[in-house]
Structures are given as C-alpha cells and as structure tokens.
Amino acid sequence: MSEKKLNQETAEELKPKDPAQEDYEQGQKFHSDLDTALAANAFHNALIGFEQSNNESGVANASDKLGDICQERNEYQKALEHYRRAFDICDRLKDAASVISLQKKMAVSYLSLGQHQETLKIYFELFDTFSDWKNPGLIVEMLEKIAELYVETNEKDKAIDAYNTAASIHNNYGHPNQAQIFLNKATELAGQPQ
Image (cartoon, rainbow, N blue to C red; front, side, top):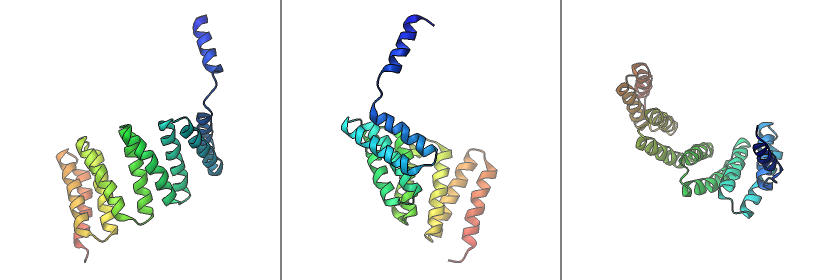
C-alpha cells in the first residue's frame, strides 16, 4: 500500500463523524440488539441532529426507523406519523425504492388500525407502480393482498376478481401451478354463501 493512500485512510479515520450520524448508527446497533427503548432515544437524537443540519435524507432515515420502532410497539398511529414524514421527503427526492418500502409499512399500520380503505388505497397505488414497471411478480403480490383484504371486508366478488386476475397473469407467464392456486381460492370463495 502506498504511503499516500495510507495517509488518506488515516485522515478519513481521524475526520470527526457527524454526531447525528453517530446517533443513527448507535440506534441501528441498539435496534439490532432488540433494545428498542435505547434505539428510539438514539434515533430521536439523530432526527434532531439531522433536522438542525438540514439533512433531509437523514431526517427521512431516522423517521423511518422511529416508525419501525413504533410499529413494533403496536403504536400504529405514531408509526404512521413518522412514516408519512419520511415518505414526503423520499417522494420529493424521487427515491422510488424508499417510497415503496414506506408505502408497504404504512399499509401494515393502516391495516392494524382497521383502516381498510386507506390500506386499499396504498395497495392500489403500489399495484399501479408495479404495473407501470411491468413487473408481474409484484403485481400478483399486490393482487393477493388486495384479495385478502376484500375477503376480510366481506367483498367476496372483488376478491374473486383479484384472484382470477392473479391466476390469469400466472397463466400468461407459463406458471400453471401458481395460476391454479389462485383459481382454487377464487372457486372456494365463489362456493361460499354470501
């Protein structure tokens, strides 16, 4: 290794870390160690630090982690507040992967709160995104979630349509076994009394 490269690495190591980033990394460690109280405190401190330094990505990341902790504690309304904040930033920054991840997390919170219409709204937004991407696997995943929610809300005909659509997609891609699974679910629902 050259002396110049060694000096550069040493300089990087000596460079002080952003305190907010240190808090965030500490929060990740606490969270992975399942110490949610300390993790929440560290992520909260990181959030404040990121806000003070106008680090939008940091604010989004810390908000996302705080949402995760709230969701783990069954504090779904608080989780939604954190997720929405992160979502707004990620959406503005055109971070599609983070937007999708946050939508899925928000759907879990809405579903846990019994807010089925909000959950469906997110499922259909994800369905539209995955359709635009022409990703049949993710489209079918969303159709299955939509169907399951329709079953839960006693909207059997809509659930049957969603299962049949998922089966059709599998048939179009040469997956007859997977298609049959969804056809069986649709048939089973159709045979149940209203």
